[in-house]
Image 1 (cartoon, helix red, strand yellow):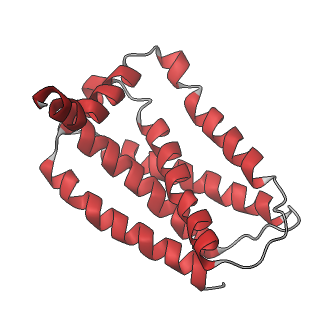
Image 2 (cartoon, rainbow, N blue to C red):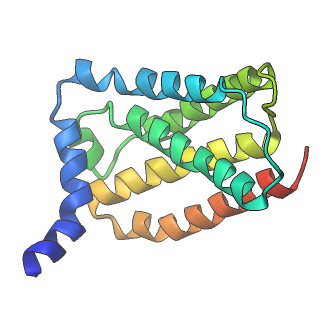
Length: 171
């Protein structure tokens, strides 16, 4: 039982450390792979269906997961010792979020050209907040940083607010 508790507690960190042990050239493939996947998914014309608030909320919530993943793939291009150092350049974390948000803007534009798809500022907010969540969560898990871990619930609340805006506010 103790082994299972240890795996649950340290599993995500072991996963990230294992990822960081891969060669850089292989990790460099992750951001383009995520971007291509997002592009393909946003190219799909949705099938007509009756309006559903639950479906819309889940669809908008997927932006959080997608852009948290994208931002963390950018962040995890740095070597492990740099990410574990207490003085990781704020600029790299910010760049990871901004790159994912910039791609979100490109994908929202692309989505606006697909029949049946809608582009919105709420989606952009969800993309940005998802990117912030991905970076904060990855750093908190890697470093066992209590201060960053305390930021995760705040990030989740902001993400939920952005998804709510994307679902119920049309602008």
